[in-house]
Length: 259
Image 1 (cartoon, rainbow, N blue to C red):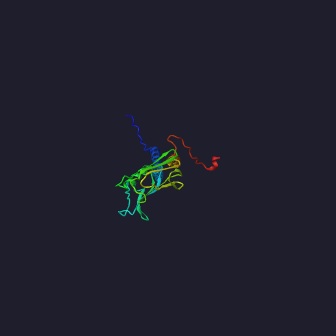
Image 2: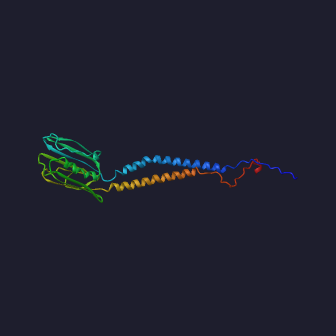
């Protein structure tokens, strides 16, 4: 019976370079993702500021109006009730000038839509009369036109007092009122008559300029984030040799023998 050949087992270690490479690559990817997330978080307040500012761009108007009565029986004169929707930009305070008593309404940085509602507040201040006021402000190109028309025939000259002021975001080019500053005009219409108030202001649409500015800013922020991610990917790139790539063996001979 022939002898049985002996079988020798070799417990050679299993190459683990692929596993190590995958682990290292995963760590680098996670590190780059973490840094990119931090960059985005740092930029988020600025982006939020951009969005918040963009919601306020557009034409804004400032000014005030006074509704008063001489020696009113109630002792208060005309009263204005500011709706809650306008309370952030419109406020009413007591007005008293000599024998004239009433209300001063101040509006600050309101939109054209809110401005057009001010006429209703004037009419509501005289609930037992036929007083009406229609106020509009519209943009046409680079010109903002203000028109105010109303019926004050129910008021009495010498007893009632009305004053209206509007200020634009640019210089006033035409008005049938008294131009108090370069960008504002004031009217003191006579009671017991029909009212016609007009004014024009010339200045570019602020929303157009703001849109261009924010667009370039957002584009710049996006480009910086992309460049930062690309730079991080390059810095933390995998420099280890690929599987199967021959590597140069280190010469262990003394320096004198190498030459």
